Amino acid sequence: MAALRKVLAVPQRFLATWRHVACRTINTSSVVQQPMSNQMEGFKPEGAFHVTMIPGDGVGPELMQSVKDVFKAADVPVVFDEFHLSEVQNMASEERLEEVLESMKLNRVAIKGKIHTPMEYKGELSSYEMKLRRKLDLFANVVHVCSLPGYETRHNNLDLVIIREQTEGEYSSLEHESAEGVIECLKIITRVKSNRIAKFAFDYATKKNRSKVTAVHKANIMKLGDGLFLQCCEEVSKLYPKIEYETIIIDNCCMQLVQNPYQFDVLVMPNLYGNIIDNLAAGLVGGAGVVPGESYSAEYAVFETGARHPFAHAVGRNIANPTAMILTASNMLRHLNLDHHSNLILEAVKKVIKDGKMRTHDMGGYATSADYTQAVISNLGM
Image (cartoon, rainbow, N blue to C red; front, side, top):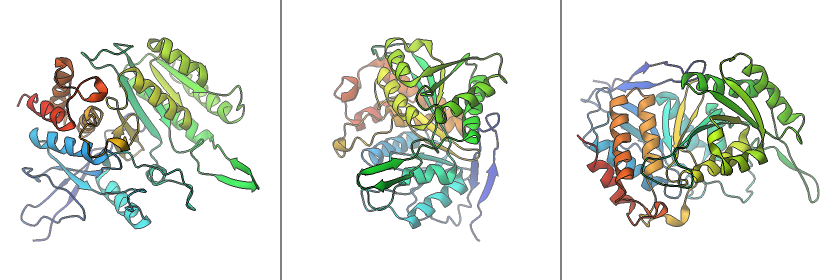
């Protein structure tokens, strides 16, 4: 009997642009194996959610293994279709990218590590990371920066959200040498995409009962580009009278985040500023190893760590912190309406952090990645 794959659309959109989930049911008498797929042992594939997994570079594959181990222990009904895409490991090509895109279009949900982008110019300006975002129109990156109870940092009880437009701006890959020794790099800002990310930010604030949205800009210098972005944010803000709206220049925003981050609630900004603020804010609560993130289009959701670093010098040393990736996976399960499993994993991570006995090197401890993952599994409470 031929394999049956039914796609159940669960279009619970987050207001205008939020959720789309696909669940595929498989006939166990004839399971069709996809290329490079990784079906974890012990899973019953009937009614399981298929999720595209892109391990990425650096410690990405190790962190994904932690996720798979935790999912297996928690009996999470998810099957990963795994694809390796890398510009530095000779695992990148247009054909491989198309395979990933086909999987994403079928599954609609993915979890990925950082795909490292080499600085050397090899005739291609647009990285595979950017190609994925553009082809899937992943315009909104959301990073929830939240202190972990029991893990003391310079700023505690912090809770803010960074929303970044990530399909244009300085990352438009439009560069050329107009004359010898003169490079022109174009920053693209459009009204359509500025309006879209502004509305997403205010929709998010409404949905999550947030009280304020702050637009981050440099319109005092880039009067037309950032000026247009700021104008769009102001116009959209008038449609949400119950939410306070303010603006702040990017350099002042960085200083204020370090001095008094509690004044912020939801921040919305163009591409490059978001990249900077994501990493700065992650440092306020413990670094790249503890902050989850996610990216959305109208149809797809990609879950990845909030601060995107491959941590290449830690490869194979079993020292990377799995916290951010496991929390990211927990958020992915909530997106899939698997709230029980999401909460189970989230609470296990919180118990490990609060207990304080099992911490990786970046958190001031000596635990290995495997030790930490096992501690999370031991606290699942099943």
